[in-house]
Amino acid sequence: MVVGASTGATKTAASVRTREAHSAEEPDLLTSLIAISVCKARVATWYAKRGLCPPDLQFICGPLQPSVGHTRRLCRILSSEWWRQVRFYKDCLRTVCCVKYDHKHHYRALSGWYRTSQQITDFLWLSVLPHLPRKTKNVATEATVLTLGGAQVPDKYKELLQLGPKYCFDATPTPVEKLLS
Image 1: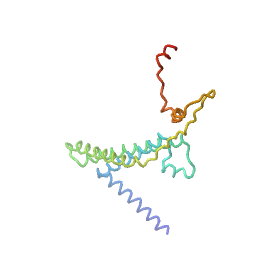
Image 2: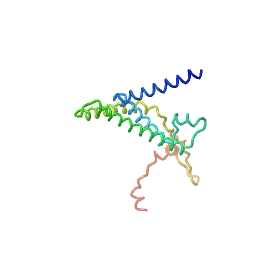
Image 3: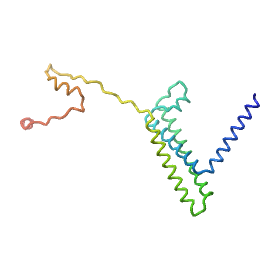
Image 4: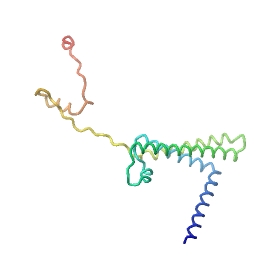
């Protein structure tokens, strides 16, 4: 049993190394990896700005909910790691284009692959963004109108005042009121 498990682990490690070596030779795969890494970095930044805990981080923390400060700090770390990965993939893409294309055309090919990765990134981000959780808005409860000194307020004005400050307006003073003040 142990022998079978170790050969399986060896096969897995070998397939990962082969896949990494293979991915370093194909610019289309590198552009996809750039787009995925950029989107993951943006998601981590999005969670850090809102102080929410992403599902990946919650999985690492287990059943305990990390504090908002700790969540932000870890999200910033994750974001910086994803951006480091983007820089690495861009360097690999630059190297692949220099090797695959002749000196005249590798700049044009590289800019084309960068443009493709940008388009893929935009598509992925626009498909990921609607699924990110939104902060719940605090819904204002119905305000009560406080009348001082037992003053009588007509019902239609009381209903208007209960709608809140959004519906309040400053009454312009009449010429007589301006003269008195």
